[in-house]
Image (cartoon, rainbow, N blue to C red; front, side):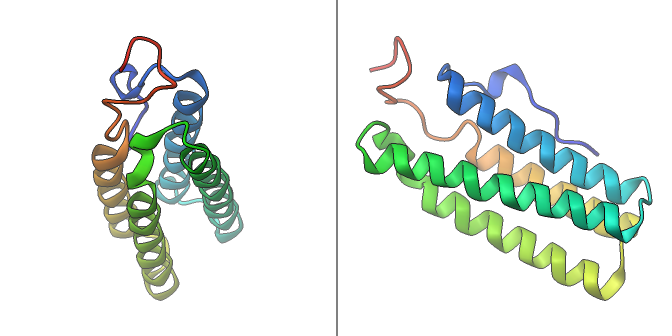
Length: 133
């Protein structure tokens, strides 16, 4: 049930594309750790790595937007809030029900939907992407 990075998700801004690819990869590691029945320590590590990277990623995007470099990233706050909601719901379900197939399926579905909504996101006017005006 992995999400998988697709070339169509790229916007042409190398740093942004690499960060988003890494975010998707970390989400896939988290989902795989649950699906494969890894122990609690491994799942917690994958969740922490996904969460820590998400915070860094959104901070970088926010910094870019605040400096006026990427005005199309105004949706950043909504994407971050939606991801926090998804991870919080996962954490609650995981604490209550453990790491079963249903929890993995729900998380995969929620994160896939998030990726579809926000990656690549509304990038029609990114000044930092060559050839887009």
